Length: 341
Image (cartoon, rainbow, N blue to C red):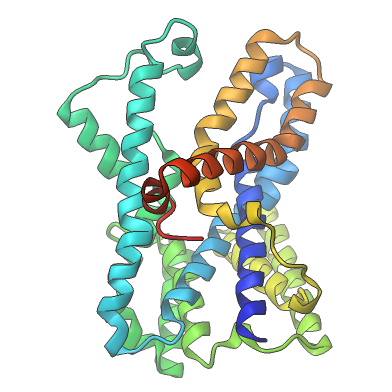
Protein backbone atom coordinates (compact mmCIF):
# COMPACT_ATOMS: atom_id res chain seq x y z
CA UNK A 1 0.00 0.00 0.00
CA UNK A 2 1.11 3.60 -0.49
CA UNK A 3 2.40 5.78 2.32
CA UNK A 4 -0.76 7.88 2.55
CA UNK A 5 -2.99 4.81 2.78
CA UNK A 6 -0.72 3.28 5.39
CA UNK A 7 -0.82 6.40 7.56
CA UNK A 8 -4.57 6.72 7.11
CA UNK A 9 -5.05 3.11 8.21
CA UNK A 10 -2.85 3.73 11.27
CA UNK A 11 -5.09 6.66 12.22
CA UNK A 12 -8.24 4.56 11.84
CA UNK A 13 -6.85 1.74 13.95
CA UNK A 14 -5.44 3.94 16.72
CA UNK A 15 -8.78 5.71 17.02
CA UNK A 16 -10.63 2.37 17.09
CA UNK A 17 -8.38 1.14 19.89
CA UNK A 18 -8.96 4.41 21.76
CA UNK A 19 -12.71 3.72 21.63
CA UNK A 20 -12.12 0.27 23.10
CA UNK A 21 -9.99 1.80 25.88
CA UNK A 22 -12.81 4.21 26.73
CA UNK A 23 -15.28 1.35 27.02
CA UNK A 24 -12.80 -0.57 29.17
CA UNK A 25 -12.81 2.31 31.67
CA UNK A 26 -16.51 3.24 31.56
CA UNK A 27 -18.12 0.49 33.67
CA UNK A 28 -20.93 2.08 35.67
CA UNK A 29 -23.49 -0.61 36.60
CA UNK A 30 -22.54 -0.82 40.26
CA UNK A 31 -22.04 2.96 40.44
CA UNK A 32 -25.65 3.62 39.33
CA UNK A 33 -27.44 0.55 40.73
CA UNK A 34 -25.19 -0.72 43.53
CA UNK A 35 -24.45 -4.38 44.13
CA UNK A 36 -27.85 -5.52 42.93
CA UNK A 37 -29.00 -8.01 40.33
CA UNK A 38 -29.71 -5.13 37.96
CA UNK A 39 -26.26 -3.68 38.58
CA UNK A 40 -24.61 -7.04 37.86
CA UNK A 41 -26.72 -7.45 34.70
CA UNK A 42 -25.58 -4.04 33.42
CA UNK A 43 -21.96 -4.90 34.24
CA UNK A 44 -22.31 -8.19 32.35
CA UNK A 45 -23.60 -6.39 29.26
CA UNK A 46 -20.87 -3.78 29.42
CA UNK A 47 -18.18 -6.44 29.79
CA UNK A 48 -18.87 -7.53 26.20
CA UNK A 49 -17.40 -4.22 25.03
CA UNK A 50 -15.06 -3.27 27.86
CA UNK A 51 -13.82 -6.74 28.75
CA UNK A 52 -14.03 -8.92 25.67
CA UNK A 53 -13.12 -6.25 23.09
CA UNK A 54 -11.42 -3.76 25.38
CA UNK A 55 -8.52 -6.08 26.13
CA UNK A 56 -7.50 -5.92 22.45
CA UNK A 57 -6.72 -2.19 22.62
CA UNK A 58 -3.36 -2.05 24.40
CA UNK A 59 -1.87 -5.02 22.49
CA UNK A 60 -2.94 -3.23 19.31
CA UNK A 61 -1.18 -0.09 20.50
CA UNK A 62 1.99 -2.04 21.29
CA UNK A 63 1.98 -3.66 17.84
CA UNK A 64 1.54 -0.31 16.07
CA UNK A 65 4.08 1.52 18.26
CA UNK A 66 6.74 -1.15 17.73
CA UNK A 67 6.07 -1.35 14.01
CA UNK A 68 6.42 2.42 13.57
CA UNK A 69 9.59 2.54 15.68
CA UNK A 70 11.34 -0.23 13.76
CA UNK A 71 10.04 0.78 10.35
CA UNK A 72 13.12 1.69 8.27
CA UNK A 73 15.26 1.16 11.38
CA UNK A 74 19.04 0.74 11.27
CA UNK A 75 21.96 1.69 13.51
CA UNK A 76 22.27 5.10 11.83
CA UNK A 77 18.82 6.22 12.99
CA UNK A 78 18.98 4.71 16.48
CA UNK A 79 19.63 7.97 18.39
CA UNK A 80 17.25 9.92 16.18
CA UNK A 81 14.48 7.43 16.98
CA UNK A 82 15.22 7.75 20.69
CA UNK A 83 15.06 11.55 20.54
CA UNK A 84 11.79 11.36 18.64
CA UNK A 85 10.25 9.04 21.26
CA UNK A 86 11.51 11.27 24.06
CA UNK A 87 9.36 14.04 22.56
CA UNK A 88 6.38 11.85 21.73
CA UNK A 89 6.34 9.56 24.79
CA UNK A 90 8.62 10.53 27.69
CA UNK A 91 7.88 14.25 27.97
CA UNK A 92 4.07 13.82 27.57
CA UNK A 93 4.20 10.98 30.13
CA UNK A 94 5.79 13.25 32.75
CA UNK A 95 3.66 16.28 31.90
CA UNK A 96 0.30 14.50 31.87
CA UNK A 97 1.10 12.72 35.14
CA UNK A 98 1.84 16.11 36.69
CA UNK A 99 -1.38 17.62 35.33
CA UNK A 100 -3.46 14.75 36.72
CA UNK A 101 -1.73 15.03 40.09
CA UNK A 102 -2.48 18.74 40.37
CA UNK A 103 -6.06 18.11 39.21
CA UNK A 104 -6.56 15.51 41.96
CA UNK A 105 -4.93 17.79 44.53
CA UNK A 106 -7.33 20.62 43.68
CA UNK A 107 -10.40 18.44 43.10
CA UNK A 108 -10.00 16.56 46.38
CA UNK A 109 -10.22 19.89 48.24
CA UNK A 110 -13.39 21.20 46.58
CA UNK A 111 -16.73 20.67 48.40
CA UNK A 112 -18.66 19.02 45.54
CA UNK A 113 -15.82 17.31 43.67
CA UNK A 114 -14.07 15.92 46.74
CA UNK A 115 -16.54 13.03 47.20
CA UNK A 116 -16.54 12.39 43.44
CA UNK A 117 -12.73 12.15 43.39
CA UNK A 118 -13.06 9.65 46.23
CA UNK A 119 -9.42 9.73 47.36
CA UNK A 120 -9.70 11.83 50.48
CA UNK A 121 -7.40 14.84 50.56
CA UNK A 122 -4.56 14.16 48.14
CA UNK A 123 -1.25 15.28 49.74
CA UNK A 124 0.53 18.23 48.17
CA UNK A 125 4.23 17.74 48.73
CA UNK A 126 7.40 16.79 46.88
CA UNK A 127 7.31 13.01 47.58
CA UNK A 128 3.68 12.76 46.42
CA UNK A 129 4.47 14.84 43.33
CA UNK A 130 7.45 12.68 42.36
CA UNK A 131 5.45 9.52 42.97
CA UNK A 132 2.65 10.81 40.74
CA UNK A 133 4.91 12.03 37.92
CA UNK A 134 7.28 9.07 37.80
CA UNK A 135 4.84 6.25 38.65
CA UNK A 136 1.57 7.45 37.03
CA UNK A 137 -0.14 7.26 40.43
CA UNK A 138 -3.25 9.19 39.34
CA UNK A 139 -3.24 8.42 35.62
CA UNK A 140 -3.43 4.64 35.73
CA UNK A 141 -3.80 4.17 31.97
CA UNK A 142 -0.28 5.52 31.49
CA UNK A 143 1.14 2.21 32.63
CA UNK A 144 1.15 1.58 28.89
CA UNK A 145 3.42 4.56 28.23
CA UNK A 146 5.70 3.53 31.09
CA UNK A 147 6.08 0.10 29.52
CA UNK A 148 6.62 1.66 26.11
CA UNK A 149 9.44 3.82 27.47
CA UNK A 150 11.25 0.75 28.82
CA UNK A 151 10.68 -1.13 25.56
CA UNK A 152 12.04 1.72 23.44
CA UNK A 153 15.18 1.75 25.56
CA UNK A 154 15.73 -1.90 24.65
CA UNK A 155 16.34 -1.06 20.98
CA UNK A 156 20.11 -1.82 21.10
CA UNK A 157 19.26 -5.27 22.47
CA UNK A 158 16.18 -6.13 20.42
CA UNK A 159 17.26 -4.84 17.00
CA UNK A 160 20.25 -7.15 16.36
CA UNK A 161 18.13 -10.16 17.33
CA UNK A 162 14.90 -9.29 15.52
CA UNK A 163 16.58 -8.16 12.30
CA UNK A 164 17.52 -11.78 11.60
CA UNK A 165 14.60 -14.08 10.89
CA UNK A 166 15.46 -17.18 12.91
CA UNK A 167 16.93 -15.36 15.90
CA UNK A 168 13.78 -13.21 15.89
CA UNK A 169 11.58 -16.30 15.84
CA UNK A 170 13.59 -17.76 18.71
CA UNK A 171 13.20 -14.57 20.74
CA UNK A 172 9.43 -14.49 20.17
CA UNK A 173 9.16 -18.14 21.17
CA UNK A 174 11.25 -17.50 24.29
CA UNK A 175 9.14 -14.53 25.36
CA UNK A 176 5.94 -16.47 24.74
CA UNK A 177 7.32 -19.32 26.85
CA UNK A 178 7.96 -16.79 29.63
CA UNK A 179 4.32 -15.68 29.31
CA UNK A 180 3.11 -19.28 29.49
CA UNK A 181 5.22 -20.08 32.54
CA UNK A 182 4.30 -16.77 34.24
CA UNK A 183 7.89 -15.63 34.49
CA UNK A 184 8.13 -12.15 36.01
CA UNK A 185 10.60 -9.93 34.16
CA UNK A 186 12.30 -6.89 35.66
CA UNK A 187 10.31 -3.68 34.99
CA UNK A 188 8.69 -4.99 31.79
CA UNK A 189 5.53 -7.08 31.50
CA UNK A 190 6.29 -10.25 29.58
CA UNK A 191 3.09 -9.97 27.51
CA UNK A 192 3.92 -6.36 26.58
CA UNK A 193 7.37 -7.51 25.48
CA UNK A 194 5.79 -10.20 23.30
CA UNK A 195 3.42 -7.79 21.52
CA UNK A 196 6.18 -5.24 21.05
CA UNK A 197 8.70 -7.76 19.71
CA UNK A 198 6.07 -9.12 17.33
CA UNK A 199 5.37 -5.65 15.92
CA UNK A 200 9.11 -4.96 15.57
CA UNK A 201 9.67 -8.33 13.89
CA UNK A 202 6.96 -7.63 11.31
CA UNK A 203 8.52 -4.25 10.53
CA UNK A 204 12.06 -5.59 10.18
CA UNK A 205 11.12 -8.63 8.10
CA UNK A 206 10.09 -6.80 4.97
CA UNK A 207 7.44 -4.45 6.42
CA UNK A 208 4.87 -7.22 6.31
CA UNK A 209 1.89 -5.09 7.30
CA UNK A 210 2.22 -2.77 4.32
CA UNK A 211 1.61 -5.23 1.53
CA UNK A 212 -1.39 -4.31 -0.68
CA UNK A 213 -4.72 -5.78 0.31
CA UNK A 214 -5.79 -8.92 -1.52
CA UNK A 215 -8.51 -11.47 -0.93
CA UNK A 216 -5.89 -13.98 0.17
CA UNK A 217 -4.67 -11.54 2.81
CA UNK A 218 -8.22 -10.99 4.02
CA UNK A 219 -8.76 -14.74 4.32
CA UNK A 220 -5.55 -15.03 6.34
CA UNK A 221 -6.73 -12.21 8.57
CA UNK A 222 -10.07 -13.90 9.18
CA UNK A 223 -8.30 -17.17 9.97
CA UNK A 224 -6.07 -15.40 12.49
CA UNK A 225 -9.07 -13.78 14.14
CA UNK A 226 -10.78 -17.18 14.24
CA UNK A 227 -7.70 -18.66 15.89
CA UNK A 228 -7.82 -15.80 18.37
CA UNK A 229 -11.43 -16.68 19.14
CA UNK A 230 -10.46 -20.29 19.75
CA UNK A 231 -7.69 -19.10 22.07
CA UNK A 232 -10.21 -17.01 24.00
CA UNK A 233 -12.49 -20.02 24.43
CA UNK A 234 -9.54 -22.02 25.77
CA UNK A 235 -8.83 -19.21 28.21
CA UNK A 236 -12.41 -19.21 29.42
CA UNK A 237 -12.34 -22.98 29.92
CA UNK A 238 -8.84 -23.62 31.24
CA UNK A 239 -7.61 -20.17 32.43
CA UNK A 240 -4.37 -20.44 30.48
CA UNK A 241 -2.28 -17.22 30.38
CA UNK A 242 -0.72 -18.11 27.04
CA UNK A 243 -4.05 -18.42 25.24
CA UNK A 244 -5.13 -15.04 26.59
CA UNK A 245 -2.07 -13.42 25.04
CA UNK A 246 -2.67 -15.26 21.77
CA UNK A 247 -6.21 -13.88 21.62
CA UNK A 248 -4.97 -10.36 22.26
CA UNK A 249 -2.28 -10.74 19.61
CA UNK A 250 -4.00 -12.67 16.84
CA UNK A 251 -7.21 -10.64 16.65
CA UNK A 252 -5.56 -7.19 16.16
CA UNK A 253 -3.11 -8.68 13.67
CA UNK A 254 -5.88 -10.49 11.80
CA UNK A 255 -8.07 -7.39 11.79
CA UNK A 256 -5.28 -5.35 10.20
CA UNK A 257 -4.83 -7.93 7.45
CA UNK A 258 -8.57 -8.31 6.83
CA UNK A 259 -9.41 -4.60 6.51
CA UNK A 260 -9.02 -3.22 3.01
CA UNK A 261 -7.22 0.12 3.38
CA UNK A 262 -8.53 1.17 -0.01
CA UNK A 263 -12.07 1.21 1.38
CA UNK A 264 -11.23 3.39 4.36
CA UNK A 265 -12.26 7.01 3.89
CA UNK A 266 -9.85 9.76 4.84
CA UNK A 267 -9.57 9.94 8.61
CA UNK A 268 -11.37 12.91 10.17
CA UNK A 269 -9.62 15.50 12.29
CA UNK A 270 -11.13 14.19 15.52
CA UNK A 271 -9.70 10.76 14.74
CA UNK A 272 -6.19 12.19 14.62
CA UNK A 273 -6.25 13.22 18.29
CA UNK A 274 -6.12 9.67 19.66
CA UNK A 275 -3.22 10.31 22.02
CA UNK A 276 -4.90 13.37 23.53
CA UNK A 277 -8.14 11.37 23.81
CA UNK A 278 -6.26 8.54 25.54
CA UNK A 279 -4.76 10.99 28.02
CA UNK A 280 -7.86 13.00 28.97
CA UNK A 281 -10.59 10.36 28.89
CA UNK A 282 -9.57 8.68 32.15
CA UNK A 283 -10.60 11.57 34.40
CA UNK A 284 -13.50 12.70 32.23
CA UNK A 285 -15.15 9.26 32.14
CA UNK A 286 -15.12 9.04 35.92
CA UNK A 287 -16.32 12.61 36.32
CA UNK A 288 -19.27 12.06 33.97
CA UNK A 289 -20.25 8.69 35.42
CA UNK A 290 -20.01 9.75 39.05
CA UNK A 291 -21.72 13.10 38.50
CA UNK A 292 -24.67 11.62 36.59
CA UNK A 293 -24.98 8.76 39.11
CA UNK A 294 -25.10 11.27 41.98
CA UNK A 295 -27.81 13.38 40.36
CA UNK A 296 -30.01 10.89 38.45
CA UNK A 297 -32.50 8.33 39.80
CA UNK A 298 -31.41 4.67 39.59
CA UNK A 299 -32.71 3.37 36.25
CA UNK A 300 -31.28 0.51 34.22
CA UNK A 301 -31.43 2.25 30.84
CA UNK A 302 -29.39 5.28 31.93
CA UNK A 303 -26.03 3.62 32.73
CA UNK A 304 -26.32 1.43 29.62
CA UNK A 305 -27.05 4.40 27.35
CA UNK A 306 -24.30 6.47 28.95
CA UNK A 307 -21.85 3.61 28.59
CA UNK A 308 -22.58 3.08 24.89
CA UNK A 309 -22.39 6.81 24.15
CA UNK A 310 -19.25 7.43 26.20
CA UNK A 311 -16.80 7.11 23.25
CA UNK A 312 -18.84 9.66 21.27
CA UNK A 313 -19.01 12.00 24.26
CA UNK A 314 -15.30 11.66 25.08
CA UNK A 315 -14.32 12.16 21.44
CA UNK A 316 -16.39 15.34 21.19
CA UNK A 317 -15.13 16.81 24.47
CA UNK A 318 -11.48 15.94 23.86
CA UNK A 319 -11.61 17.28 20.31
CA UNK A 320 -13.02 20.62 21.44
CA UNK A 321 -10.46 20.83 24.24
CA UNK A 322 -7.63 20.02 21.85
CA UNK A 323 -8.88 22.59 19.33
CA UNK A 324 -8.94 25.28 22.02
CA UNK A 325 -5.46 24.44 23.28
CA UNK A 326 -4.08 24.26 19.74
CA UNK A 327 -5.58 27.65 18.90
CA UNK A 328 -4.53 29.63 21.96
CA UNK A 329 -1.39 27.82 23.15
CA UNK A 330 0.05 25.90 20.17
CA UNK A 331 3.36 25.26 21.92
CA UNK A 332 1.60 23.62 24.87
CA UNK A 333 -0.49 21.58 22.45
CA UNK A 334 2.59 20.22 20.69
CA UNK A 335 4.11 19.20 24.01
CA UNK A 336 0.90 17.64 25.38
CA UNK A 337 0.31 15.74 22.17
CA UNK A 338 3.92 14.66 21.79
CA UNK A 339 4.34 16.47 18.48
CA UNK A 340 1.61 14.37 16.85
CA UNK A 341 -0.75 15.85 14.30
